[in-house]
Length: 151
Image (cartoon, rainbow, N blue to C red):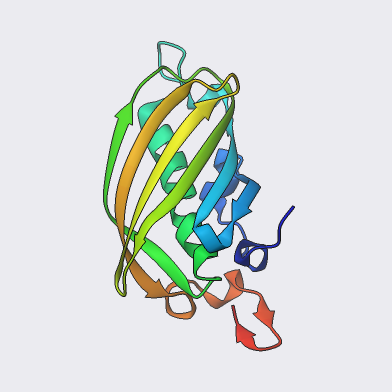
């Protein structure tokens, strides 16, 4: 597994709830692949993972793409996010992929998608996110202090 700036960040409770785990990354390209657990507890009455949960998974994929691309210097706060639900998500493993399409000085644009274990695309998303210095955005106890200072 490739080392990324995410290695120096304590996973927040929301990510733990979703079963978030890094699968692969190409920091220089702003690309990341994240695994999630589509738990039965996330299902709606029809037996599929609820759309809001899928949206959270997409958000938790696209933000890290920017974070790793900037080597942990910049954290994102979502401004807008559009989600397209393409297929029902059954309980089980879900994989998210995201790519930074443009990294500006104050705003980033990111694309993401979620896939089922068989490769079926479940949802796609585009987002714009405000860029904030990580040291100002994240509480100190969630950052690992490195030899050169905060992440």
